[in-house]
Length: 341
Image (cartoon, rainbow, N blue to C red; front, side):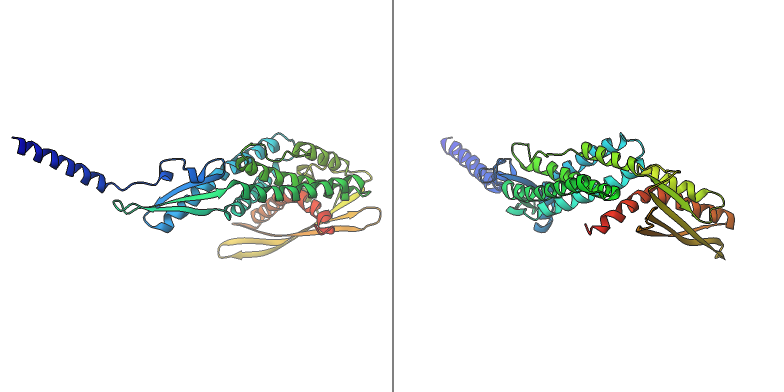
């Protein structure tokens, strides 16, 4: 009986040891925080996959999600801000696109500092695991440098807007100051994620104040519309609508500036069952008194339909959409490009 009992105890002990030996010990970083990569010093991401490269990529992606939150938050902020303004709805989509592009570029720059700190291969499942780590101090330094650059640009352009004697020089500088601070806000979002205090670098300017200053300047711009060969008045209406969408109103009496618009359309006839109309839309901004040309912009027009009248109508609709979405930026660009900024 004693021999049987001893045998049973031995068998249980061996089985227990065999079971423990069959379960690989997972590294501590798979269970949660690890002393080697504490949250106070690092941002981390986890990933797993059938190959080591797949695990590494997923770990980097997991870490990048930390910054994607700021992308969503900043885009939302822009939507709320732009949506609350009258006369700027056409610029909302373009502004959100520019901000998202900036945020994604900034995230890519930050991710260059990420390294794969740990790897582990599970012998039982044959899966690979990776830990991606980003040191907070290095990421914060890079972000602070970009923010400082944008603050310098804002200060320079605010000063230009104050001192310029020409109204459109003021408008161009004010627009660049606003753009710099909107980009800065994107970097600030990420810095708050990296900075343990959550404070980042508070700005001396606000986007709201800079936008209000720009709107005030735009309202002061006395811009007239001059269109040649516009029997239906459709082109004149589209140009006026484009100015209004950008926050500038058409001035009919004694304008200081003129937007000359010209539309040349050619009927190409029927081709492969469709009637085609193509052409060129051109707008030019000039000073009325001196006739000095501030800039010229051209767009290609192309439309088709089952009959010529509808094809031409669609071409005019295309012109209307272009002017409402892009005329404001074109006018601003005439000033910005002049300074080579």
